[in-house]
Image 1 (tube, rainbow, N blue to C red):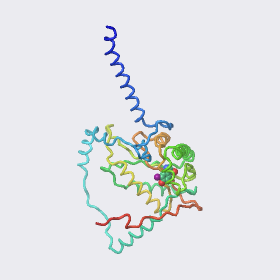
Image 2 (tube, rainbow, N blue to C red):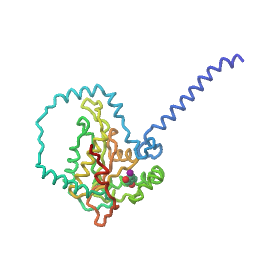
Image 3 (spheres, rainbow, N blue to C red):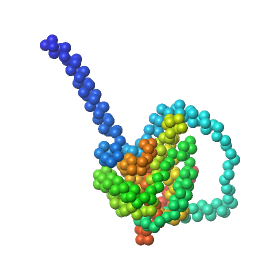
Image 4 (cartoon, protein in one colour):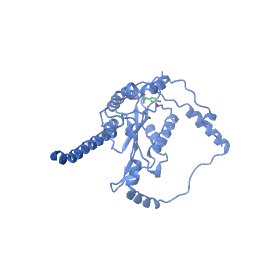
Length: 298
Ligand code: IYR
């Protein structure tokens, strides 16, 4: 009896330790990101299954943690000279004409899944990427990396990774509602264009940068900055008569980053196959919302 009363607190402590250990373990499996090449451990973010876990970043935490480094940055930025703006001013008639012309051009843009293998001049792609790099970015951090792939073997490896994951996405992860919502677009996990298109452009957001002193540099609003640059990239492609489809291969980010030897601060945001449209390309007969449905004038 005396032995039991001595042992009871010991047993209680042991029990607490075991429960604590189990709780920590279960949290770890909930938050551990998927490692390259594995599909297990994948989880969606709350009720938004299209939010790729890999796209979550530690921007906020980084902003707080790297306060010292930020101070160094801000100090340097204060020395930046400001110069007079050089920007064209058009007569109103010309403004009207230009506004209509650009609308007409961009209204012809369609997501195209049937791309011709015909080669595209490399310099055109360079200029299109240069144009995307003119986007505004948080604190002018330019938090983007555009990986341009034309090597057939690498394109094929990309296709294998994407198709394998997309099959699981369509069959399991996306769920019936999402798959039904996409039915009208006639998409599925088979992505022939990943082999056929002369270029694949993979756009990575850099969740942070690296300062010359090796410290992390905060990339404010990195996702919205890179998204804006992607919009400009799409317009630049349309401007030269090339097509693409804005594909967001869910859960492929870590594997593609690994294949393309990109660092851990880069997260895949978009994968764009780029080329001329195939001569027999078709697109769904979609209509756009009229101005009064998308604009509120107060
Ligand atoms: N990423 C998949 C599924 C897909 C999702 C949306 I939202 C689309 O507008 C189209 C497709 C795919 O590329 O097939």
